[in-house]
Length: 550
Image 1 (cartoon, helix red, strand yellow):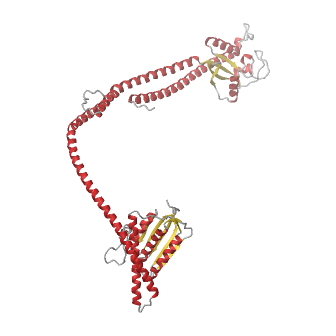
Image 2 (tube, one colour; image 1 turned 90 degrees about the vertical axis):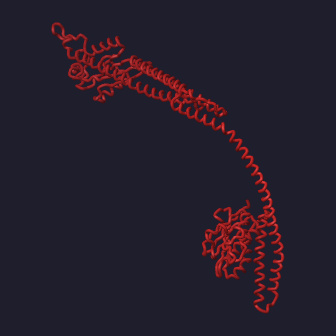
Image 3 (cartoon, helix red, strand yellow; image 1 turned 135 degrees about the vertical axis):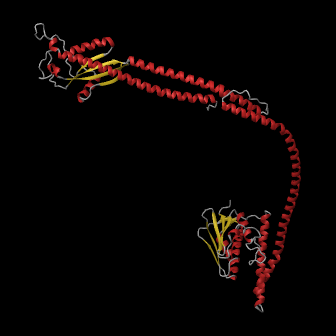
């Protein structure tokens, strides 16, 4: 759950930071004090071993003096360096709990037999003569001890009892070991309890924890008091004033506001804002009344305009419907006599023997212009149906090979009359599509007829069908090397009754409906039509038709 109150947002991070610093400090103090305790124990062990070693050396040097009788004869009294050292260790241990032992791997006295720890140390001291001491903290029977071991090496004073020849009986009655100067004779092992150091360490850590705990409590109380008195309580007062203003009561007074300087500045700004709002609100009702009257007048004017627009819109719809009905009726009434003229012209051309070529030429002109006029009327009729929403598709399976062959048969005579080379090609792999056969034919026929119209004598027109890069479409292109279309005119060529040259003296006849009808029929199939052209270099019209009807 996210903490949102400011006092807790300050207290919690402070406590966490102080706790982390306290933990780091305690760990460092623990480590430092533990190292200090170990160093103190090492120092004690070093002093004790030096004192014992000095005692051992003193007894060894004065062995003959100690063991000489009153008559001056040698009289061994059983007091040698080993016995004295062991006795001193026992007395010392009784007073302070320390254990002092003289150990050897081959002791003369079973009391000097090393324990496992001392055996490992003796082995290391034997292998490395550079070691002058060895220490370790161990735990035995739930009690921590500091064990300190120093080597005892043979010097000249030791040779009398432990030197050569090996096996000879020394003054104490033991066989000599045959050792040489520098050999390891044994070690002084001191075991010191660490109770005092451990208690001091625990007390220091406890004291550190108590200090930091009191510090955390003090910080928390200080932050809580300061934030409550100087921040949160003033903010709550400011919040109550904001709520009062939000409820519409602008009679707030924040003059006697005790907080930090920043919050006092904020309260002063808010107080000024409330006064300004009160002044504005006092004049607002009058302005609202004025605006309400003005808005009523404006609404009345808008209502009148709306009524007028509805009347105009109704008239425009009637005019549009009248235009569509008129065009459809005229186109239909004109198409019937034109069809009769074309048929009679064809019959006359096939059966009549002409007296001269001019009669035949006139009859051909009648037939050709009648066909052009019929073509234009069909386009007008189709566009009128599309505008009125009456033009629908008769969906069937369409083979583009059949469609393009049909278009080629119709267009080729026109191309031959203009001495234009017409090429039609369908690539392998072009699939059957779902569409309206007649309307697909009209698309290609309009584009091809348009290409022949604007291609000069001796030019080339190519109809090509292939599978588009998007495998869901077929691509039909109609390409010519005619007059081309400029870039600025390409955006308008698919509009109705638009030609590049719309003047009365234009060179090419036409109504400007062929491309517009091709576009409408393409989009009716869910396809796209586009053009790529350069002026005086020719044009390429591209039609993409979906393979499957969506």
